[in-house]
Image 1 (cartoon, rainbow, N blue to C red):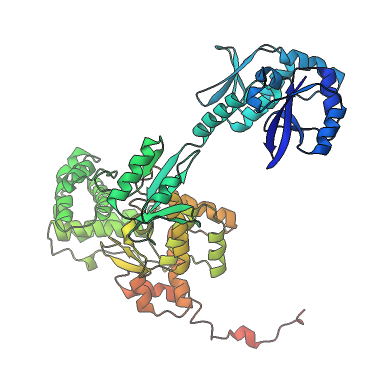
Image 2 (cartoon, rainbow, N blue to C red):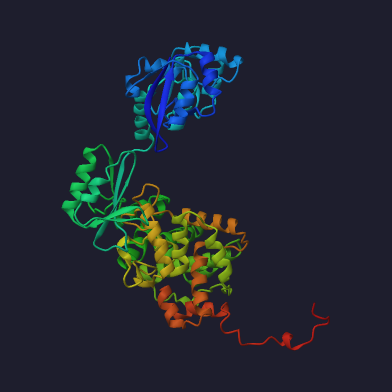
Length: 560
């Protein structure tokens, strides 16, 4: 007996039917080309046409007509019989499967299958993603995905339509939860962006929100920056069980890094060295703090003054003269120490005698400094720079390197850019507290604007433009260095390149394009134009009109 019911499939009316298991009947049905099987509805069906229905009646199979599938008696038993069985060898497995006791439940983001032993069934379960056997509960479990559920249902035909739909809905809520994200982007001043995603998320509410409009480019809603509107959106979606991520900047709730005062930093720094140097370091750091020296300078000078005191031993360093200092520097020069380190040591000693002890008898001219070499910075050509930038695919990494190169930033300056520092309409970025505790303004190019739009839409930064993994604190300098290193490997560039190299490239390429030196000095934030003039030695702009004397000679062979 076949049980017929109306069915809409592929947007067309069909006639679906189910039946009790009968291998002969199943073979007859599968031998007819006009009869098809639907995995979606887990039943056989024919087209709702007089021709196909006449063919169906000519088979001579008894049937009953029902108004809907829900009225089919013993529906679950019928569904378990609709399986593939193309020959007699599979018929026996089919009979065993229909008698198999099985239960499928959802718990802890996994589907749990309890069934009697059957080799074919076990192999099927083991082929699913995340399959494992639980010895404690004597059950199989697989990852809770719709794909795994479909495979289980097509093999066992255990679940009714209602049970299947209910499990599908529960799995989608787990694997695709409802999430609402609110954030701001620099190119939309006075507006807030809202992203909706997840299974059964309420899109209609955003359509009804006053002043809202949909941005199809980034798949987000844009609403006016109004506290009442934001509150109503948050309250509504929380009431529907959605996870609301409010990425709007709030100074009171933002993660605050431990900000120690100068005396706490001083005590921590002094405690790192032997106690016999405590009085020396206390006087040394007190003077530096009074003169408002940067803590980076303090932490650089302190180790050098400790090394100097250790070398002098029991001698009272307050009474030593320039000859003793020169002797110490001679010892340093005999070691494998860079010239820069020796200069740092000289600067620390000079600071101690002139600023801390106020000894006017020790002048800088009396201390012999090692001669500095003249080293040019490593420069990438425009093609190499473009190849380096094109090797990246992570938008955050792309944004960082574009900022370093496109704005000529130092590494620390990159990491301290805040969202409010981007002046979108003026095509500028404010760099605060740069080297020497100085502010400056750098250019914001149109290409960089496009990168920032994508970056801000994807990562939704709150305070810092480049955020760390916790999405609240600053990105680490070590991570930026690793990004540059990985980009070099992908691009196949063998030059020694650091994040600061991109700053050198920025200045050199500007000079190649004819930008005057004072403008480059202002963009780089150099105090002395002599520092900027180093790029005149690597630019190609001044050498393009010079003809090499070698080009005036003839080659010893014919050109190919």
